[in-house]
Length: 81
Picture 1: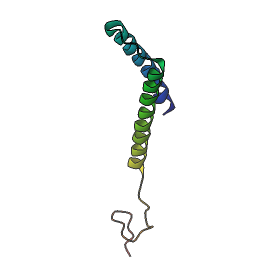
Picture 2: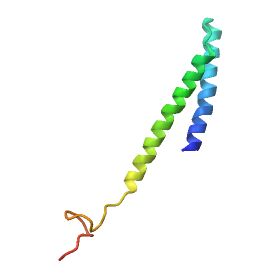
Picture 3: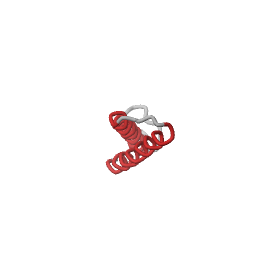
């Protein structure tokens, strides 16, 4: 997860600054550095949330039921008594 967040931070840093420079070049409107930093931070935090959720869903897919611990187990692990 760390690598994905760092890569997203670097990509957001480049994309936001290039977009701000293009806006300034074509329209003459200067985007302040504070707003650039807010955009970069927001993009990075949102990507961290989505990557974390994706990792949690992957872990849930690998989870196995507690065999023999519950009375309503449906499957091959149910003891025939």
